[in-house]
Amino acid sequence: KMLPPELIYGSLLVGLVAAIAVIGADGKQLLGIRNLFTGQDNLARFQRLYLPGFLLAMLADWLQGPFVYALYQGYGIDREHNGYLFVAGFGASAVVGTVVGSLADKFGRRKFAILYCVIYFGHCVTKHWGFFGVLLIGRILGGISTSLLFSVFDSWLVSESQREGFSGEQLGNTFSLAYFGSSVAAIAAGQLGEIAANVAPLTQIGGGMYYGGYVSPFDLSNVVLVLCMIYISTRWSENYGQSDGQSTGGNLGKALGAIMQDKKIFLCGLICSSFESSMFIFVFNWTPCLMEEGQPTPPFGHI
Image 1 (cartoon, one colour):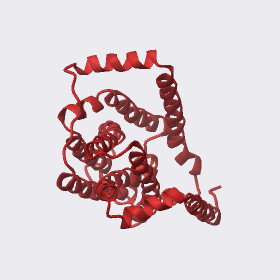
Image 2 (image 1 turned 45 degrees about the vertical axis):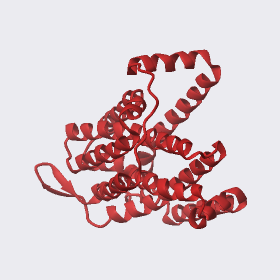
Image 3 (image 1 turned 90 degrees about the vertical axis):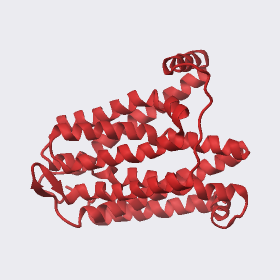
């Protein structure tokens, strides 16, 4: 049977209290948060410039995450074909991830941050159709945008920090605030997404097109993406990577050589890929594990 609501919301409350306790015990983190809102130094101003764009991008991603599998199932797609869709997204991310960094260095990281918004917007739009082929295209677009999200924004931050003359410790503080903010955005996104999903039931318009239900969080995500694109376009400056004149293939060869020559780089990659693999397995399985025939639909966003 589905977990009782008391247990679900009780677990949320316990998690929130634990998170607040951890933050309260970390004096350095509290100081960084306080300086972010009240500081007038260059670092605080820079953080107030970067974080809204980054957090809007993360919020758009978090908004639709809990509802992907459930939406596909609502369209009548079985577990096997649901898996095909997920693999297509992960595969697209793996392929594009090998080249997106060098392309962003060459053509501009701000442009590619905006490109993330555009591609992810297309990914969310495809969720209005219940056709497997359209959803497959959407998953591929989602995989591409995921590669952009987790590479372009970080590289823009590092480059701008170096240009501003911030130390490694100051850059680390900015990263800490960014990913703490991302966690807060994830919590908020779950609640907002659940509210959006319950505004109207999943309804067919015609021609295989739907609105409402689990499509609504994707529409809300698109609103956030538009705001993110406007913010980045008007507030961020462009920056580029250093070019050594080599092609993308040459750069990939250098990267592979560095991995094979330095054991630490190899082990770091192995650890990251192992963690990501376990996370992706969880992402695919957690929704069907909570769903049981004849039982009420779980509140995926709250969970």
